[in-house]
Image 1 (tube, rainbow, N blue to C red):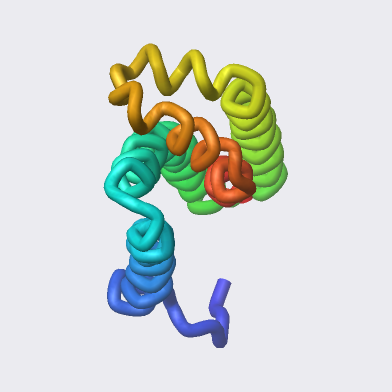
Image 2 (cartoon, one colour):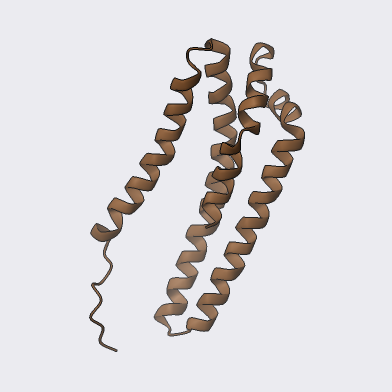
Amino acid sequence: MISDKKPLSLKNLFFPIFFETFLVTLTGVIDTAMVSSIGDNAVGAVGASGTYLAVINNLLSVVSVGAAAIMSRYVGAEKQRTAKRTLRIALLFNLAVGGIFSLVFALFTKQIVTAVGTAPSSTAFSSLSARMPRSSRSSLRSSL
């Protein structure tokens, strides 16, 4: 099958991937800069909550990358229907896991922050930082 589409290469994919990663990192930097005027405890809290949110984000990213690899194999084998099914399963899985983690963070933030050893002086700020909409967007971003 001959196509007029420009073939994807690493060079063509580099900038969108780099830009997305840069923006995610920039979000953390902006969060830190915004709370720096509040005090050291607030900066530490944003860093602490950002760390475990990044772990969950990476978990969801691993599922997405794995699904993309499997889908590529199916597309290469001209099994479009199976590739689409794989996509649906991966999206639903990441959406469910992202939703569960968002719910857990919303309900048990203080317990999680305490369990990971956050300093008592930063616990209140960490709980507040983890409950902000950023946590939901971060979890759901990976699933889309």
